[in-house]
Length: 125
Image (cartoon, rainbow, N blue to C red; front, side, top):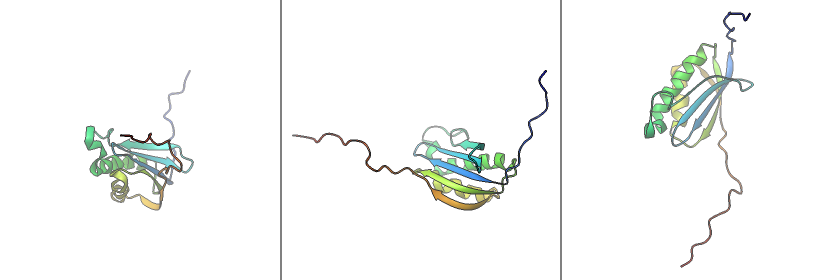
């Protein structure tokens, strides 16, 4: 018969924060040093819909909600990885200061195409 004991919550004092900021939404993920996600949130999951999901305020609320969950794991400091070009980039990082999580480093990991796709054919006429 299966044991009915609660899973032991592991303590993660230092981890990573991944912020993906698109024009339409902002996704926040707290993970341990290996990259295993411990808490996550997004503007859409925070109750924002449509064009409001892409705003800086929505990113701030999403980051605060995810940070509260992450603090339950004992998270104290994070390395921040920012991806994308949306409005939520800075707002998500600023929201951490209200959550008492110290930022060790901030790294830009937005993908930059080199080469890219084939251009459209030239217009004639």
